Image: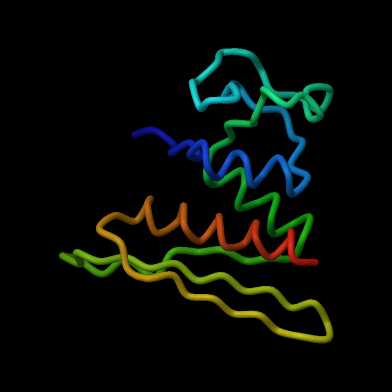
Length: 122
């Protein structure tokens, strides 16, 4: 069993949303996986994007931005998965539900992307 890493598209959104946590690898400017560690000092480099696990990015969103991202409950023999995104800013409550996907990880990835887009709108 292995943790799912975020996609290149999600990595770009994460970087531009302020994600600056150490990861065991990164993507280069065209999406190739690099063994170079992504650390805060690389945050401003155009050609380096963080490659955290989905769960690490989820935790960062929750702790830093109070955005809750979680895939819909898994039902035995379910063939479609969705993801829920919630943010309570005090003045407003934002809720987003992704369309269904054929895997839990794909639904989670889209939920993470939607959460990162909320940060860019603020």
